[in-house]
Length: 68
Image (cartoon, rainbow, N blue to C red; front, side, top):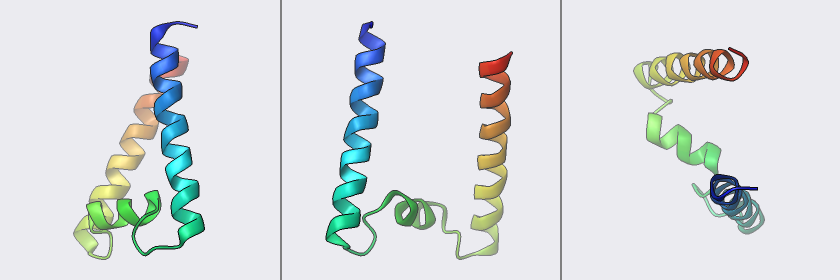
């Protein structure tokens, strides 16, 4: 394990812990999915399109990045 593994692992663990906390407290707007909807304003057509295009582009890039 190197320093990068520890940092990324810690960030993922912290994010997962907060998500579990958000789900258990059931406060409005605390989960990652609720925050993502708010940040990208997916309730609007433009926000939904921007999110869909961005998410698809990220997925395609990352797949090529990892497998290429």
